[in-house]
Length: 253
Ligand code: UDP
Image (cartoon, rainbow, N blue to C red; front, side):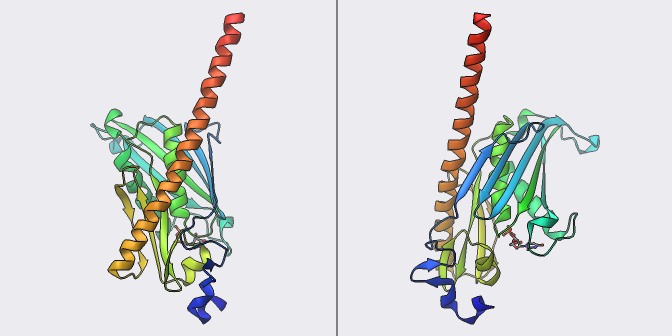
């Protein structure tokens, strides 16, 4: 309730409740290749959010009537674990998880070269292990890296984050209290060249505030993209090194 008393509670001396500046992202950590049985996988922490993404495929579509003769279909399942939120969530799909699965798929599909794999399916599973607002964006970031880890050809990585309005100010990457009691929340997803593949808004912004929020969210996506790119490069240079060592051992044998 303290958050609702006066707007100033959200930002004090230029800093937010968690000590961030208005234009600052929460700390982000990304790990690639965390699941042995998935074709591609990724673990993401964005602030207190903990998310894991697993990609399977391209593989045969079941049931077969879902097959597309000219391209692969993409399935994306967003699932929030019962223990991921303060008040235990009833397990299983609900209206919100259907929505977030749909927007997650639509955010990623434009960059996936689906025409390379006719009659097949690429399955993306996103599991929310701990939630603190921004799970749809954290899930999309994880899924994008997991798709790259699975070797799925893409036009680029998708990066995603939200901007919001709290205490009359536009802020980057709102956390739970800001999301719950703020005036607006606007998640976006973006390609490296700046094409927007997700745009949603909860609450209201003026046109000027919208433009400010969009620029801020885009700058957040660019920062996330750099982390995604770095971890993928590190992972694959490491694998390349390991392959080189193995080849040397074989040659010595
Ligand atoms: N949340 C919750 N229980 C639910 C759904 C959401 O406690 O059943 C919390 C959770 O912390 C989530 C936040 O509310 O991250 C914001 O949810 P929203 O639907 O805006 O999606 P998100 O911001 O996570 O993409």
